[in-house]
Length: 141
Image (cartoon, rainbow, N blue to C red):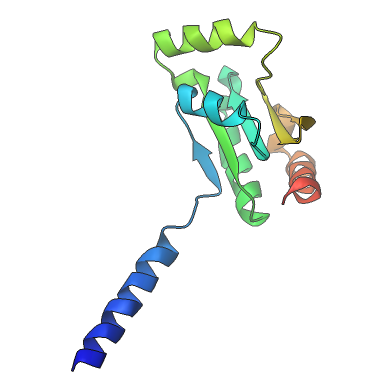
């Protein structure tokens, strides 16, 4: 009986841990996003959505789908849904030339090097979507 209980608990724990995997696309609050992306050891994809057209036309649907298909991850901040105080802080920070913020572009950062993919209405086309998937595939870990 003890073996059955231990086996059951082990299987339950394994199931819970496997379900806690990292989502491919993670929306962060601005403070968290800035801290993560500007840290010296950050390596990966990042994006800041500021364009109202991107919000209105659901660019994130295509972006999420591409990252899911490529089994890669992205952190992003949506300035369109921020409160005014946070947006003003972001706006001030974006004017700082010493700080790189990937506004309306997906960037891959590694070892102080960056590769950039511009996000615009082309993401809604098949060609734009495939180009994003290629960009992700070319840079993923």
